[in-house]
Length: 500
Ligand SMILES: [Zn+2]
View 1 (spheres, rainbow, N blue to C red):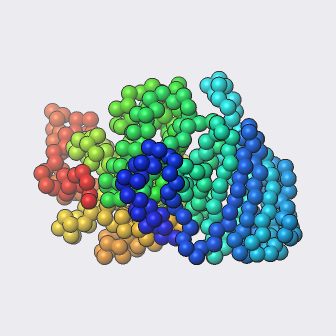
View 2: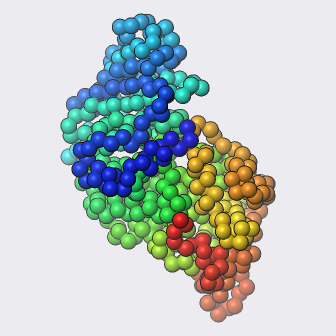
View 3: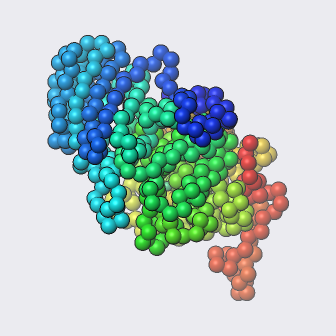
């Protein structure tokens, strides 16, 4: 499953894509199954109050051995047990043995969705229902098999209701999807009910699939901000990493920790990003917040083993400011200043914890003791990618940067079911860049007990420090620190707009 989406969606010309959005009538496939690939079809009818789902599944060719579900609670929510006119289905807890069914058989069942309804608060009283599904208790799916089978899901919803999923929409005008190959238990959010949904075009063939609450203030500006952020990622990489990214915007009017107090990224069945926003802030403050560029950047790496998450958090921490520098939201020296301050936080965090190699830090953080470790994880990883970026540019005399290698990685290795170890990812990046940069740095970083040195990295980037503090201290103090970037230096080039 290598970038199935891209080849198809690239065929849609810019004008068609734009007119589709404008009219939303014409049916043009976004994504369809590969020729020769089997498709199991799910027809899903959602009840008038989003309280029930009637599901009919028709298998193409041989039925799977089992259908299964993530959570045992699914059985408790069954309204009608699965039945097939063509043969026998054995129920074994959360597994349904379907292997006795003949070819091209269908089955149907009904399930309650009430468990997933959001609690009514004062703010939501005026709304109709929303099912907010984060655990699959309702959709029985074929047990993963080596055989490549696509799952198509077609929804019939009440007229007032919308749907938001990380799945790939096959057409703009229809509520029909193909499920991505990434396992559902990697996390996902499915929303069905009373909210607004918009397919916002990033560039031809690439969309943000955005869910917002109906009454969200300055909605158009929020959607433009998200779309512009997606475009800054596309600008960095040279292409947007996927055909569709699901975005869910949750507004909390009373929070005070900045315009975007929280965001998270999930990969189950496709890419999904959730943001909590505080709409009262000025729109410029949204652009100045790093959370959104951070979460979008997570789309550039495949799923990484938990012990190595310093790599994925690191890339996002580095790029969150590079994207802001490239798009002009931050001036180049300000963007580098923020990266520098981040590294200082990482160094400080590392000193707070007793000496341990970086490869053990994530595991230890998980079992308590977050203090210091979070900053160490995020900013060690940021330094890893910064040093790799610099080394690539030095070795290629400025011809190759990290973005080009990440684009190659996107072409080969982002989708699918594999969870990568850090070493395997470093090897792959070495292979793609035809260097040994990533592997050598990986060994040094993962074994390091101290925060790696970065003063000379900044020197090689072409950044000079001047301290406005009269005390003339040699160690730059972040408050009084001024950065000066040499023209045409690597620091200058990295923040240059457009990688194309
Ligand atoms: Zn992150």
